Amino acid sequence: MAVPRNRHSNARKNKRRSHLAKTSKNTQVCSNCNKETLPHRVCGACGHYAGKSVVWAKGAE
Ligand SMILES: [Zn+2]
Image (cartoon, rainbow, N blue to C red; front, side):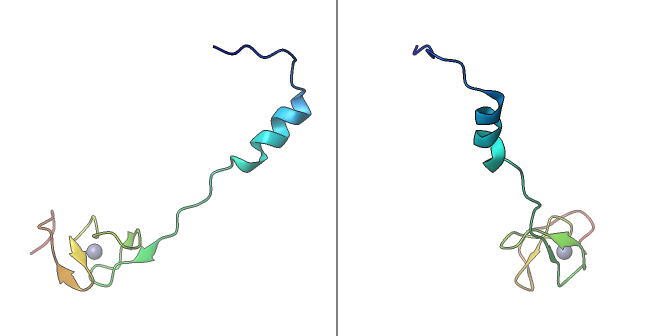
């Protein structure tokens, strides 16, 4: 394995890590049950996608 020759300063390390921050997830509201869901995903609460029931989930009638 390659071994680093020189120590990198804390400033250099911190500059490298300036791009690593996590961003908040973008969420939408389910049109069937009004719960928060991820876009382009089946709703985890009611199993609906694009206005149709596609998965039988707990709490669905
Ligand atoms: Zn839903």
